[in-house]
Length: 110
Image 1 (tube, rainbow, N blue to C red):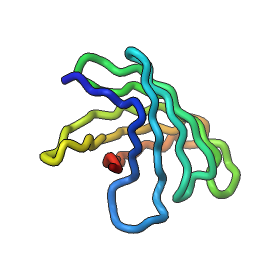
Image 2 (image 1 turned 120 degrees about the vertical axis):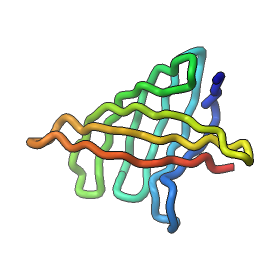
Image 3 (image 1 turned 45 degrees about the vertical axis):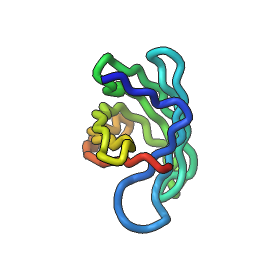
């Protein structure tokens, strides 16, 4: 699957307006972005995208308590019936005393 993330905006799936929003850019197989909202004050990410459209990224941000969070993430895309991209993400924060792992779903905002 050839996925183009350039100028795409995503938000954490779910109800409510106070969620994290992501703005992606892409050139060739490199994707980068900024994100904020929800519990994130400001964040940045950089990733490579493989031939299946999967993102392999590293991220860092300041949360609402102004604590730094660093980590890595794999994002697997699915194209929805309406053409939007949904990303299933598995992340791992690595700069805490205990490594935290989790999963979230992002959905493209059009």
